[in-house]
Figure 1 (spheres, rainbow, N blue to C red):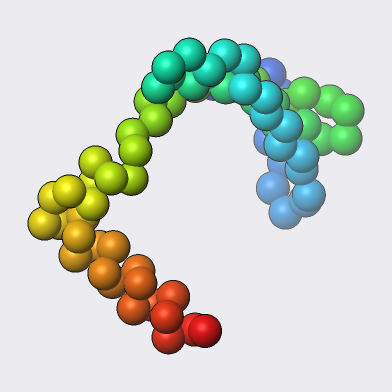
Figure 2 (figure 1 turned 180 degrees about the vertical axis):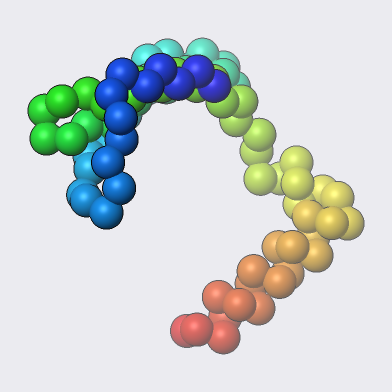
Length: 78
């Protein structure tokens, strides 16, 4: 992840985050984003993600336990 801060970022006010997928190739995803105060760009970011299918995690004991915990939480709200 790369972040370039262009201006001081104010606190306690509403800001806008805008992002776009630059490239999606296989499991790799590149995203570019901006943090804006009205039309002024306060920061720019670029990040690379690797998509890992949910089945990869659910195939482990830890993933199965976490999946079961989420099912119980979601089931209790319905």
